Image 1 (spheres, one colour):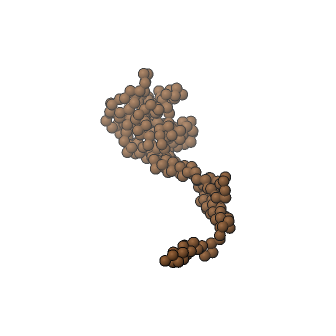
Image 2 (image 1 turned 45 degrees about the vertical axis):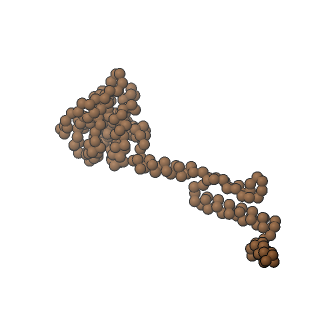
Image 3 (image 1 turned 45 degrees about the horizontal axis):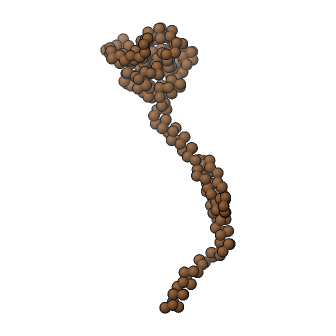
Length: 233
């Protein structure tokens, strides 16, 4: 029995075929690990999304260490995808920043939709996504202009188009002449139909359409619930 136990212990202690012994084994293991680190880094660089560097040796020995890849590239991609899913525009401020300047719109020979708005206007914010989608459809044929009523620069335009509630959309033909306007919290279908007609130089299906809007005047914003019937004339 003792003899069989000794044989069993000797069998367990046998090295695997081809496995180096002692220091040679340790050196080979470290060399193999460094090779894996280099291969991993090369593959990651070919993938185009890794900015981390590989350190082949730790401070205390020959074991390699690969820094964790940064997720910056993935984060940027996800952000752009989320913006695209939301229509390309995230807010009223983004839509305004991406609009066509009034002077340029009046000079390029295209019809224009001029929206009077304010940063504090809750209705303006609520329809911003709809406006962005409409711009995506007709932006190559129609100028989309945004004028902030809190900017005294646009006082003359506000007086000319009699803006007393916002959002106020003024529709101008290719010569800059007014064709009609709508005001307030209007359905997307109304805004889309007007933009479509304007892009084809047709009569607007909805003009002087007024729904709940934010009033413009001294003393700040006030909500108006006054609604007028449709006037297609």
